Every structure is written in C-alpha cells, then in structure tokens.
Length: 282
Ligand SMILES: NC(=O)c1ccc[n+]([C@@H]2O[C@H](COP(=O)([O-])OP(=O)(O)OC[C@H]3O[C@@H](n4cnc5c(N)ncnc54)[C@H](OP(=O)(O)O)[C@@H]3O)[C@@H](O)[C@H]2O)c1
Image (cartoon, rainbow, N blue to C red; front, side, top):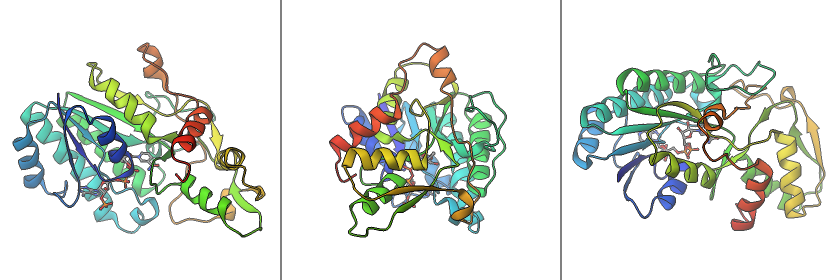
C-alpha cells in the first residue's frame, strides 16, 4: 500500500513514519510544500498517487492560534480542504487527524464520536473547520480524534515535567488538577493507525488511551516512575492563565473502536510506563 503522511516531521508524524517503515510510505512537511497552497498540494498527491493519505500536518501552537488566525485557519481548515479535495481527485483514502479541542469541554463525562462539537478556542475552531472540509470534500475519509499527546522527542507536557522533575530546584511543582483528559503516546496512536489502514472503516473515530487523568495525576505518575523526589502540588486552571481557553473536560470515549470490536487502546498508565521504559528522557 502506498501511504503519504503529511506533517511527517512533527511529533505524531515521526512515530507514524517509523511504524510504517515496511510500507511504500512518503513523508512530507512544510519544507516540501505548504498544504495551504492548493496547487502544490494537488501536485504532490497527484504525483505520488497514494492509496491512503494520513494527514497529520497542522498548526498546533494552541495559544499562538488565538492571534495568528490566518496561519491557524490556513493550515487547519484550508490546508485540510486542499488535502481532502486532492485525495478525492486522485482516489486516495483520507485519514485525517483531529483533536479533543473540537468539543466545548463542559460535559461531565467523556465525549463520544456522536456528541455535539463546539470549540472553545481558535485552534479547536480551525480544526473543526478542517473536519467539516474533509467530510464535504472526500467521502472516503476517516477522521481520527486524539488528545493529550506526547511522543519521542516532544515537545509535550510530559517532556516539560521530565525537565522539572530532574531539575536541581527543590521548590514544589504546581500542576493543574481541574482539567481531565486521556494522556496518549504517539507510538500507541501509530500502532492503531497502521491497523486502521487495513480495514475499510469510514466516518469519525476517537483514539486516546483508556482511563482518565488530570495534568496533576499525570505528573504524579511520571514522578513515581522516574523516582523524582520533587513535590507535586495541585492547583487550578485559574492559577495559570493562558491566551487560549482550555476545556475542563477533554476526555474522549473510544465508542466506535469498541462498537466495531476493534483492539482497545492501552490504559494511559501502562502506555506511559512503556513509553518511559523505551524513552527514559522522553
Ligand atoms: N499535540 C497534541 O497534543 C495533539 C492533540 C490532539 C490532536 N493533535 C493533532 O495531531 C496531529 C499531529 O500533531 P503533532 O503534535 O504531531 O503536531 P506537530 O508536532 O506540531 O507537527 C505538525 C507538523 O505539521 C507541519 N505543518 C504546520 N503547518 C503546515 C502547513 N501549512 N503545511 C505543511 N505542513 C505544516 C509542522 O511544521 P512546522 O513545525 O515547521 O510548523 C509540523 O512538522 C495534528 O493534526 C494535531 O492537530 C495533536
């Protein structure tokens, strides 16, 4: 199978390229072409003629998106539309990566695939516009929502905590305890994406690790595994004001994975332990 991966130099893209090394796989990124450029995108997909495109490229700097609207909507909405229309034109299946941030975050249980969206920041709005373009322009698509991602080399929250835990500083580390999500390593997502390439599933699917955690829970688990001595203390979102609003509830329910009888994602604690075993420095 010929697979084209956009955003191949990003955190997820790198794990995916490593996972798909036995396929005829081409990775492309911003230094090859800008997905916001419709002709360049069409040319690249038209020349490679992939059976499937896994579309990871995105403007992911959530706070920057608040002020850089053209960049956010250029990559995440227009870019996804360009990838989707080229996939349809050249007969490629499109697997497009999206985010938990398409949801408002005010539900008191995990969001499943059929819950109503309603993003609370520009990044989420631009990614939702990308989802809508994929649905409208490429019928042969699978939208894969992920969240709370970390992967080899970072950057991610896990990498920030590994740095803080290993620092000589003895002050306690204050970590937000009122946002919930599903910490998920990129190799686990890449494993499942490889499996999804082999089955004709279409529509929308959530793909995050099982179990739930706050950022505080995640930090405690990192410090336990790494035997860091620094104290971790809980604080609230209000203690760390950020330009972009963060959803209090980012938890995703992998309902479609379950209903389709597909292999479940690992629990986040097992996945974290495996990740830190393989990549002790992140
Ligand atoms: N990280 C998370 O926690 C998270 C959570 C939920 C969903 N996601 C989604 O998962 C996917 C992968 O995320 P990631 O963390 O791997 O992101 P990442 O590390 O930021 O990688 C994204 C890649 O896309 C490239 N890119 C940006 N704009 C582009 C454009 N206009 N044309 C071509 N390439 C462009 C980036 O290049 P530059 O670095 O040069 O800009 C980067 O190499 C994205 O769709 C993201 O929205 C991520």
